[in-house]
Image (cartoon, rainbow over all chains, first blue to last red; front, side, top):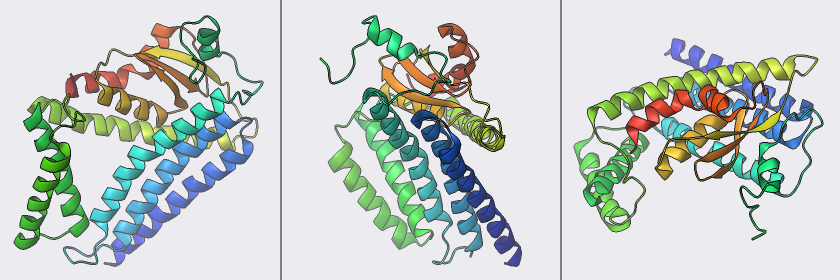
Length: 124
Length: 164
């Protein structure tokens, strides 16, 4: 299936582009919070599109060499775990008082901690 | 509810088995069904992970619609990120805003937080009960109701039907 290989290769290229964007984002953004943001979004879609590309490249109807099913499982795991792990990274950075960039306009979480609306974790 | 837990965990395990094996050989399916049933009875007869899922036809339709909305948002998020990263002036305007959700079940809140993380420019920073603190890369509004309307409402209307 030459056409499948072509489509798969194009999707792999698109996925790599998305991962490249995520790497450039990591370098260009001013603080850890914006870095985690660009890193998560671009790398999630990059990984998903690359996986679909690999699945199409190895497409082979109902034989054992077919990777489509495994690729779908990988995509589900990426979608479930990637946001959670990045959220934990960003939350840990926030409560370790990593400074926000000077561009930051508003910080409702700090206001609420200062006004005792919520408690800061670890300081009970 | 115990039976609902069993059914959902059995289906999840069975689908994972079928996808991993990628064959429709009857022997394979019977072995997979037996193992899935055994695992869901042993490990998930008392878990409360799936108790709040609704198993109605409407819920299935809404799951599908939710996935479509989610994928569109994911692609929009990436176009947005690409634009911001590649433009020389780095047009960001970050801040942490607060939203409130109507959803009650833990699972629905988890999915909502994950979806917010993967949509354009927003990232769930902290969850306190029904309040989410969101790091937003382009703050154009600080009012709780308006931000909720803008960021959360599009997912909430589907998740409301899926979970009670």
